Figure 1: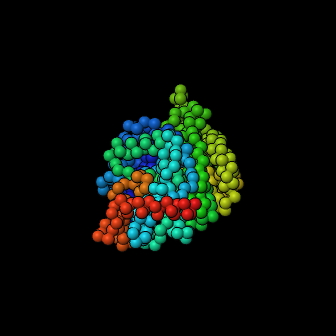
Figure 2: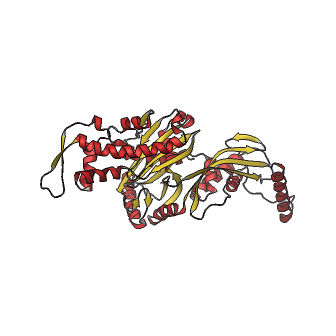
Length: 437
């Protein structure tokens, strides 16, 4: 990619919408602006009111524009792992260029071949990631461009999601006056940011505790292998406090933020004032009592996530659990997670200035993910149509210059007639398809 470029990440969460603007200089990200607005029109990570969500997105974008002193037109958006399905895919084509040198267009074509499949009408392909390429039987290739061959194959990972969820997010971004550069699976991007290279390789679990829901993702061999969703999060802890202590949601949220603790054993007996409905004076409640309410809901979330993770033996991996998300700002939550998960647990907090809070991890991960995509990744994504055309055009142009080959055949005097050339290509393709079956 270019030596200097601006990236904008849009994190549409249940409780808040965050926009992070960063400048990438020689692959070094520098955050230059942040915007945040209270979410409206979302429930449990899903958009339920497009107009309300659009207004909240515009508010967050305006804040980020003012702080970064730029006009935001294009964003990278994250999509939650609700009903996400992960499967392997394969594609194979005959190399189209007469010189048999593999070009960027061939990479796109083999990715398109891998996308051919029957999907239920309610589902849509969200993302495709190349794992490796094979040229004439030689496998394990990461970038086949410029190589000679007649048969190109690709092995990849395919992500599908509910069509309604994808459409609603795209519609909100469009109505907010923005262009979508790419949709990214949230836990995939988060794993790339929060885990070290060794943790991604040998395996680890990323737990994102948000306001509307909690997500656990298994990362192994640098790939997203499994996700589990629990439809409860920080908002449910706040509602519990509100119900048990007979106080408003606003007061319950303030008490949670100011005095909350996820580990009741670590909480003190110090009295804190709580405004109770129907009483003129605040009622005194101990921090331990408040912690017991929070702990009960947190344990339920952890227990359900653990049950799902146990099904795939995720805790056999050496990386343990890395937690992030706004709820993890609660004191004592790491100790409670260690007790429930019975494995090493640590907290991830972004170290960028102005973003040193776990609630910003998801938004920052979107920028980090897109800024580190290779040219081959961009070409493969282009087969989906989820990539902004300007991004794709730039990548194809660079790919063409790099390989010193055009992506389309240019007829010459020695070229066979169009129909005859096409028939010869189809015959060659069929021959290799039958030969290698």
